[in-house]
Length: 356
Image 1 (cartoon, rainbow, N blue to C red):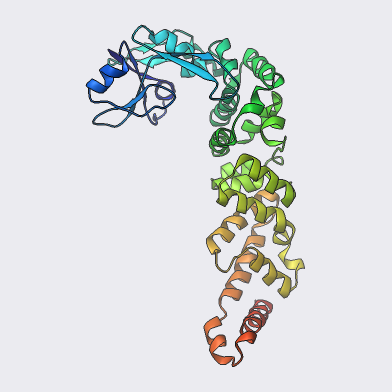
Image 2 (cartoon, rainbow, N blue to C red):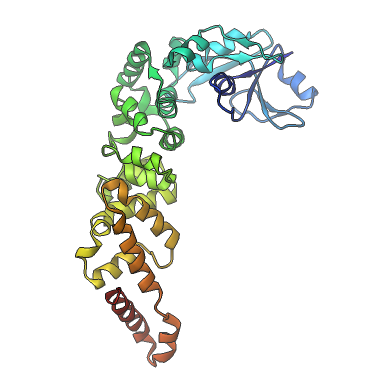
């Protein structure tokens, strides 16, 4: 049994970055031998085991054969006779197809170190075309490593995959998993540029691209994922946002933020043109008085849409004025309960009007 660190941890160390989670490949072993050594099996589709002490994942070296469409259309072969080179051959990119043994020696059968130096994202073999998730992974890596370019032959292969219809077989959860990671990368606009250039954008998210510069602004300001999603979809109608959110099964916080911006963007960008009544109505529709933190996050998107800093400041003053009304005192002073809500609302409007 030989154990190797593989994939991203090796790549990141060679790039001088702090590696994240480590992936391990075990060569020359079997499931029975792993279990006998105290490893706990956890993989449903692949032979993956948890280390008895560290609980890190260890996968048996394996090969794969395409049996159908999409991410799950594979049969897996894992046995003691599968070599490290065979296992690395099935990986997506050369920069991810390197291993490191216990002494720190790098095993690099497919030119990963050379491509790291050249700053190129290149597929390892034609087996790349068997898994459409890899199109998204290339786009995500392009967003994370903006100094890297996609090799022309890899771009061509991705276009061929899209033309064959493979991208349409991806499940929403896998698409969102990769999109969300790319959105949070240093240059998320490259994610969409790569997917558009190979034609995958139409199949994956109806070809909806972010307005120019908004995601670069979001990354520079280190905005949260829900705000980045809202900015990506900021040129869409609320109906388009809802359709795409359902198709991609977006998390609730991302869907809600995007819908708020789609519905109330015009009002949020021009508070000074609104009456006090309309300003309060905008706060109410955004549920700003109850969900203040979410509303402030929504306001953080406005500068990326061209708004001056004063716009968000105006909304914060409006919010403070409305929130400063003592609703409890008003409720106690009103005899007829059905008039309480009206009196509170009138008081909030008056407080907004009196903003200095």
